[in-house]
Each structure stands twice: as structure tokens, then as C-alpha cells.
Length: 69
Image (cartoon, rainbow, N blue to C red; front, side):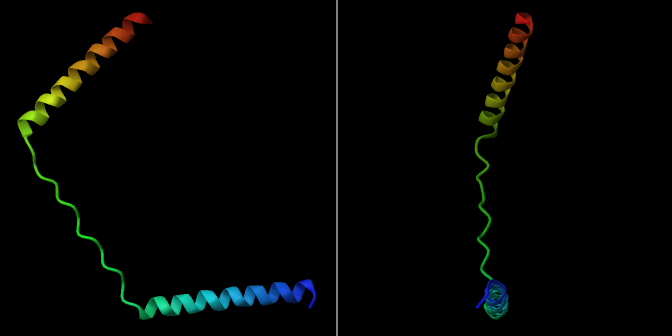
């Protein structure tokens, strides 16, 4: 076998394997999708307070860094 025949045999084997896996995929049922995770609402007042603190800290940091420039 020369190099050309080996390449042809490898290409044909790859195509055959691809076709076989595609046919098997059509026969098998589709996989089940996991249920979406549901998050609890939590404490909205606490969330709002933490968000306000983070915003204030961000404003303070921006003011500090702008003075250093």
C-alpha cells in the first residue's frame, strides 16, 4: 500500500464511523433536559440595603481616585 491508498482508507473509515454515529443518534431518544433551578426570593429589604451600601462605597472610591489624579 502506498501513501495515497492509506490516506483513502483512513478517510473512508472516518466517513463510515461518522455515518454510523449519526444513524445511532437518530435511533436513540433525545437526552432529558434538567429542570431549571428555582431560586428563592430571599429578603428583599436586605438585598436593597446591601445594594445601597455597595453603591455608596463605589461612589466614595470613585471620588477618592479622581482626587489622586
